[in-house]
Length: 274
Image (cartoon, rainbow, N blue to C red):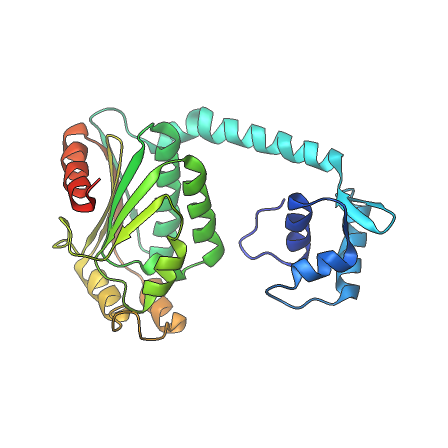
């Protein structure tokens, strides 16, 4: 399938042909080599493999995706969307009216994956036009560029407008600005209504509050790691990852509370002037 956390040459060629059919091997090599250099022989080898598997067809010197494979991909996507968005799975994640659900993690990376899962489930279930967030430190920006980019692509496709107040980004500020650079993303590093809370990350989606609560020692570790000097310090992934992969206590809570959600949404709306 086309989605991949770390696209290799095969995935890169499939993505290129998904955007534009009837491309020559030379053109595909140029498109594949924008970030990593590939030989023409390597491109031909992968194309031959994809032809043998019925994924790609060749007409003369040009290649396209197999329509049969595209139909298969559409069926897979439709079935998956039905199972995950229209049936019971989302209901296992989202609490009933007036209720709350909590999950505990000992790993920030796994916590971030589940956090993203809940956000997307809420976006599917809610018709709110705006999402407001408080992020003390954007540590998740360095975890996996492909994963975070995929999340923000889903944000853009949702048609919502996202307002995010960051407490501090330090050396990650340039990465954050690049990640949140779409017109539906509004960000601020100014002191906001939740700036006194450095342990709790909050998303307000409709009548739901999604909170990620870090133990105080974990919050301090992240604060020290990402302190930086206003974005002028270089990013050191190894040092940052050491702070994120250490065992920790972190919980994720999703609560249906129209009153709390309305109050926080009002505070953040006033802060952003929207």
